[in-house]
Image (cartoon, rainbow, N blue to C red; front, top):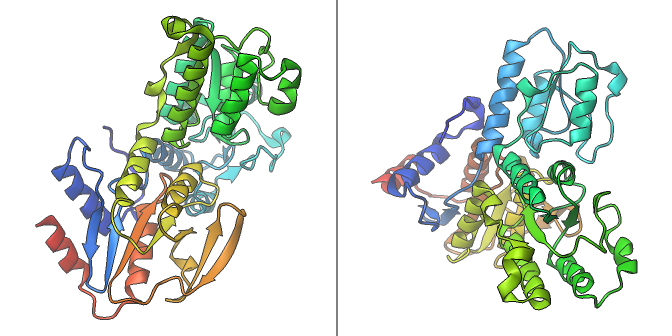
Length: 407
């Protein structure tokens, strides 16, 4: 796989040593057990896969090369390049400005742009309408498009399904930039509907099977189906794709449920006419990170710390998985750890930052899960590890632990 030129300050010598060692031992990525760093009074369980994915590194490389190549031009991102406040602040310090926020609210007026300006398309991609708007203004985007190739893969799969008259179901968060972009591209080729979760798939099944009146369809799915979608026509043939940062297991569960619904209506012998197998659209990085988290959770742990941006979808799902087993603290960086007794963290259910006291249990040996989302620099994970180490006396040195690991 291609390697990218990512600024060194995003890297971590500790994490890099661990990742290289795991890659050498397991080049085909079949082993999802965690790496255990045993410092004596504290042990860290690091996920087999975490941190920057292909799409994020690609976007960062393009952004930094653009800044370097065009020092005298104004450079904009449509919205946040990735969902990590550290990286976005870093880019702002380089002079890059954001035209919109993550919800699509305008921060800088379109009328201020000129054809001399550079607008970078973020890793999530963008809608057909926004790209056309920029092109109509004379702003070229092709050279400055950081859209993740795995997002484009989803768009291409949806287009092929549309050619065969499938209705596209998009598993995603309706307001997320990637889902908005995928909905736009899919809608250009096929009737398209966004499903947030398996519960909404169950509601859809009631409409498919006729147990719920189609007159209620708009009340349930208002503004989440395309203009070319007619529930009286387009509930007979489906393909499922997803926002690539969703839980892969939930996307598969939705697809399996919709398939079962179509079998119930049309019979197993006719299923290929009414449902397409789309498992090949799942993002490898999202899937690897989630599988690695399942591997983590098979081990004993006292708590978990997940590092990343609070608006990061893939990171949020890692938090959800960890919460099922241990107390889990979702933080931006080491600064959120105030002391050995107090931590500031984001509660994904209440959508608010909270402070928890006595987050580190008092015991002879503490096992801490440590992982991060696909948009989080490894350097931030190392800073968290190093800060936590300061709370434990008489631990082995990092150098000693790494030597023991790679030997």
